[in-house]
Image 1 (cartoon, rainbow, N blue to C red):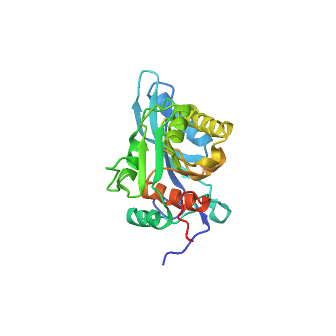
Image 2 (spheres, helix red, strand yellow):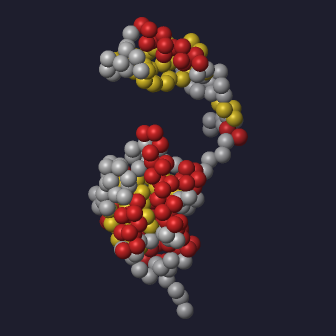
Image 3 (cartoon, rainbow, N blue to C red):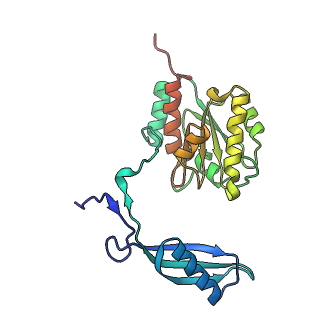
Length: 253
């Protein structure tokens, strides 16, 4: 069994050698001056013995560089705190059984890519029947009614649709993240829910390439899912959260 390390550094050729590779774009033409600028920037970042292993022209005024070098920093794993979604992950079949056992009515999921975000790959992967990477989407789940509104949906439109369809769970996908536009849009949706007195009416989940659970909780959402998450991850959390709220659960005499 491999020995667990508390203090770690990046690994390249040998354990804890501190080798690291970074990539970035500079607002200047590609050439010898650009490479020197890239190495100087790497040094300021704490990367020593930096070399440009790849550089290329992006346009007349921009260039891209990949730097390889060494860092002396180390990380103490015992000092780190990870905020994760706290729910048991179930398979599609287990989610269906859970819904059948605990809920008297189908669970309504409504989702969209909101604001100016026209990218629907993420929300489609979670909701559409075909799903993604061999994992079916929520449309295929028995006991779940999935409504996908697509892309560029206003926050107000999403909330109106959620109320109209008596949704239990709202899913929001955010792919466009330049200048933190996703943060502003997600914040506005929570503010809208609170202004309308509807925050407690739904389980609200966000997802996207720069989304994680800690961010979701910070913004006022119930959960956040980043890359490499599928419909069963989202459904597992949502159905368990709904059961905790006591919404639509079966009542036994």
